[in-house]
Image (tube, rainbow, N blue to C red; front, side):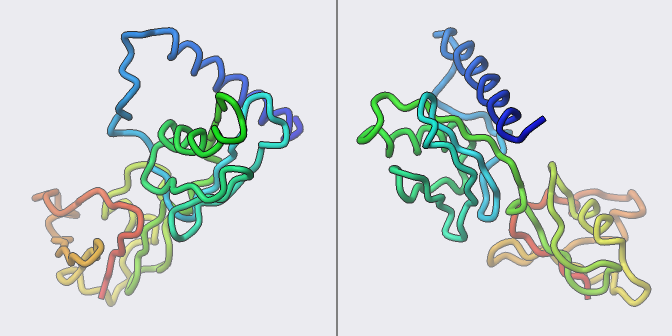
Length: 190
């Protein structure tokens, strides 16, 4: 199947879902659910505008959290779900396209990554394809190497440093420090 055909099929499916959603006036449409995927810098998205063949493009979320799209220019999308990102793009396009219907499909989640550094088998970035805990990230990094200090593992979350009780986690005594990681977090294993 050609890529263009696949994109068109996805576009038609998205329109069908959107029209069914819009047909229900009782459906809550103003607030995105908490469990939606939020766009991150580095993610790839395919944006298309219905009935506007020239306005179909795959773009990446830039480090500043924005995308650049024809006619709309730079649009801030980092932290938004796809529905809110579609609305933000449509708002910018209204000046040039009457009643634009924008569809945004996430095609790559490369921006949704954490970093595992130090004494693990495979240090480096870990792409999160779903909710990822500290133990998940350490497992994806191949586990601790034989010289790792199990008692000094920490997570860097923004400017916050959070200690991890690895021995409690692997023994099953307590899962209190097995937090779900967020994009950009770093697990440090000295």
